[in-house]
Each structure stands twice: as structure tokens, then as C-alpha cells.
Image 1 (tube, rainbow, N blue to C red):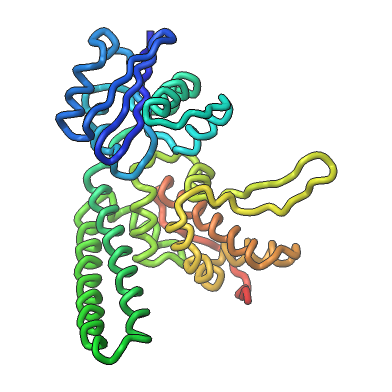
Image 2: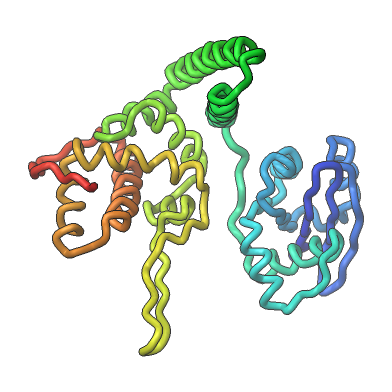
Length: 323
């Protein structure tokens, strides 16, 4: 009989609900290596051969625990919190406590049987950390530049020093990022394939790699859904005919990062130009076309990565300019 473990993760602790044959056992543990081992010992010995662990994707809070359990040959699923929330709504669940949430996750695991999870490879984990660091430094630089515009004369010199130092640090981390990608054969090959797509440069390529690598996507549609680029239709009966929009139920940073490459691709990528031209001639709004182009780029990127062949096109069309 399968035993289901629902884990509600927080920064300092995690609550566990063990669901077996309709009965629960619950306990809280410290979110530390000592707490991980205590959980492993707490789980029934006879259940370890057939156990399914489920926890929400909550950033880095649960990564160490999920990795610990995976390395001990337990089936681990890390799921989108929206799925858990939706399942709770379907049960008309009204109680919101850590213990109740762990029980809810256990019931969801039993009902949905989510796919297994694997830890991110070390090379991709480092790539993600470097990409996040560049993004953070750029955010700090923008804030300091904004302060500099209206700053009092007495602190302008200080702001200039910080701005110059941030620019230097961004260049250092970008070089580390470039060296890391080049030093890893798999990442370097994927980077070359992605940059073979007109409209995609090094900065966008590294960001795309950091989000896609190691995810195990099987179809391009899975990638667009992961990024929130898939269309969301709004129709009911004969009277409700809402506009089709992006779902935006995905990573906003990568959607934002694909916007400028989409505009560049409209000028330099023949496949994208032809695709956009058809939509414009059909009378589609310009922002809808840009969103469709972003989705098209994802499909092209997925195609070159899956085939292992650089982008090539025989299509020749006139430039399309979206104003």
C-alpha cells in the first residue's frame, strides 16, 4: 500500500502529514539536515519501499529536503502551489494552518499522483545562480541610477562610486557566467543552438538556458505553459465571447526577457516575419502579434534544442514593422 507524505515547507520548519489507508500521522521538523534525518527515521520502515512525497515549489526552501529524500530513493514530487490551492478549493477547504496544509498536500498527492521530480544538475544550478545574480545587480544599478537623477549634490559623489562599482561587478559576474557556459560541453552546445536563432543574443540565451535546462520538457507546448505564454480563452455558451489573452501563469521574468528578442526577430528572423505578416494581414492587434511571436520563438528554440540542429530557414519575406 502506497504511503503519501504531504509536506508544508517554511523557512525554519516543515510540517509533515503521513497518509496511509485513510489515517494521518502528523509532525513538524526543523528545516535543517538534522530535521531531514529525523523525518526519514520517523517514516514507517515498512513504508519506505512504497512512499510518495509531495511538496509545493516554494523557491529554495524545499530544495534541500527534496534532494535529501530523492537521494534516498523515495519518489518526490514538487508541484505548483496553484494546483494545491485549486484542489483545496474543490474540497471547499476552509482551514488554513500548516498542519491542515500538509494534510491537504497528502490528499492531493494521492488523488493526482503528480510526476516525479529530479534535482537540478550542479552545472545548471550554478548557471541559475549566476543569472539571478546578474539580474539582482542590474536591479540595484537601476535603483541607484534613479536616485542619482534627483539626488542632493552632497551625495552625488557617493552614488557615482556605487554606480561605477556595480557596473564593474556586473561585468565580472557576466564574464563568470560566460566562462561557466563555455566550460560545460552540454550547456555550451545548447547555448550555440539557441543563439543560432535570429533575435536571440547571449544575455537572452543564458536566461532561457537557466529556466529550461534540466526541466525535462517533452513538448514545446509544455514550455509555453511553463512561461505563461499559452493563450487563455474566455468563452461560454452563445453570449460570452471574451478576448483571448496570455495566461501569464508562469515566470514573469522570462516572459519579460523574451519581449525584446521577439521585436528583434520580427526584423531579422524570416520565419517569424512570415508568421507575423500572416497575423497582421488577418487584422490581429499588434500586441497580440508580439505575444504570438514570443510563443513562436519558444517553439523554434525548443525545436533546435530537441533536434540538436542549428536554426536554418529558406523563407524570404519583407520586413514587418510593428509600431
